[in-house]
Image 1 (tube, each protein chain N blue to C red):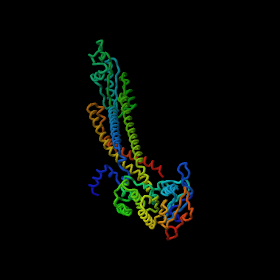
Image 2: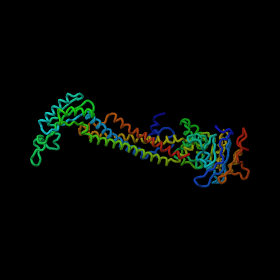
Image 3: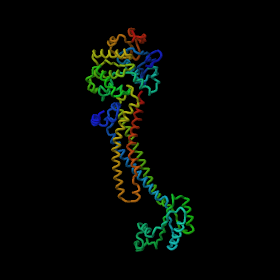
Image 4: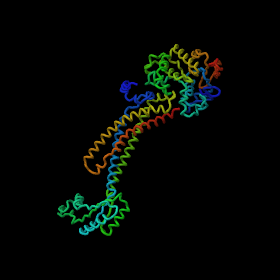
Amino acid sequence: MSWIPFISSGLASGWRPIAGGAEARLVPQARLSGPMPWVIAIMVALTVIAAATGLSLRNTAQAAAAELSGGVTVQIVEPEAGARARQAQASIAQLRAMPGVVSVRQVPQDEVDALIEPWLGPGGDGGDEDGGSDADTDVIPVPALIVVRLTGAVTPAKLASLRAALRTVAPAARVDTQSSWLRPVFDAIQSLQWLALALVGLLAFAMASAVLLAARSALGANRDTIEIVHLLGGTDGQIARIFQRSIGIDAAGGGVLGLALGMVAVLFLGRRFASLGAGLVDSGALRWSDWLLLGLVPVIATVLAMLTARLSVIRALRRLL
Amino acid sequence: MSKSSDGEIVQFDNVGLRYGAEREVLSDISFTLYPGSFYFITGASGAGKTSLLRLLYLAQRPSRGMIRMFGDDAITLPRERLPNLRRRLGVVFQDFRLVPHLSAFDNVALPLRIAGAADKDLDKPVRDMLDWVGLAGRMDAAPAALSGGEQQRVAIARAVIGRPEILVADEPTGNVDPDMAIKLLRLFEALNRLGTTVLVATHDMHLLQKVPDSMIMRLDKGRMMDPTGALRYPPRRPAPGRRGAK
């Protein structure tokens, strides 16, 4: 077969030749198309954005969880500064001697002051309206902070062992996992992930519904042709294939367009967030496997559209003898 | 050709048909079609000819009775086996039922395509068939561009191109001039000589004279009738080696 007539006939009649086979000619392609490729393009673009958001949130949560999984914070909550310093030093020594402890670091006073500064004002020379200095750590005792990193994730048993070890040398010590501080953040991220997943599900449902309506409309518009093909010995499979193929072409075309639109939006948003330079946001960057998954969205959409079309057509044909 | 041990190709036994809760449009219809025979079904408008043909070409299930085709019980046959049965039939619909967006060529090629013929195998038989019905120059015309008679000829060409075992034609000469009507009847006879069982529904009594070897069934108000005795009902089984009934 010469390619030139194939291409010229393809240009002349849109996607029809790609539909393949004589069966495709039984139903006019234009009647099946209409707004369907555009609807599918929009659905796919939104699905890509929602899926990318969900994947990015998952990556953020996983990175944060990995970072914090082996972390423990020891606070020495002792009002008297001398006793606090002694207990902190004793705790550090005790912790370093324990098995399974990778690193122990006392957070310097400057960092502690910087941490509480947004709430209590600058340390030393800050003050309230009365001219006092509430943020002065000499006036308001601030706990000494020790950051401990363990091998592997922190388990309740490891936590209990740490508490027991510190009880004698630092009675004012409070031991907490770092992840427990960020539990509300993780919960929020997880909720957003579920929301993204629900959005993907809803968009898939909406697309299937749109395809169902399009298939029904095409069936109605071509009822006579279908009945003729049926009476001439056409099988349900043959007739369903005509619609399935046609809607598949619409879905594939719309899907590629939607993927392009969605990718542009995801890349744009990714750049905007990357420019924030925040560690937690940076950790949400999409991996290559995520991009691959996003690339599968139009494929899944096409398969879903074809399946919906096939099932709706076969269901309608079952009403004929 | 599969058929029962008696050799009948179609057997209707006490068949009745009603639409919804209306009275029966066909009642107690019993007849047998034998391979290679030529039948007419005649009767006035509204006698039930088209309803009877719809049962024959498997567009409709009867309300009661039994229909056997090619040795199978057509009523209880699984739905997925019906297309194969339909492909053994050629049907000329009263309203032609051409696919409006297909050319005359593609309409005639339709049964072959449905049966899985490759495009390269369609050209010659379709051209020959259109040539035979006098439409060689109208192959690319859409049905809307054809006259009623031309559409009817396309419908006939589509019905016979697959060399069906039974040809069912509902008023096939209703829209053609007398010369073309005779020509089409000759085509049906030629097919009949090749072994196709032909059944033509018509209210044109003159047409019956044109095929002297045919058998005639008459419908009146949904029942098989033979009031004059001149018409042959039920059709006699042809003697071995002979076509139709005398």
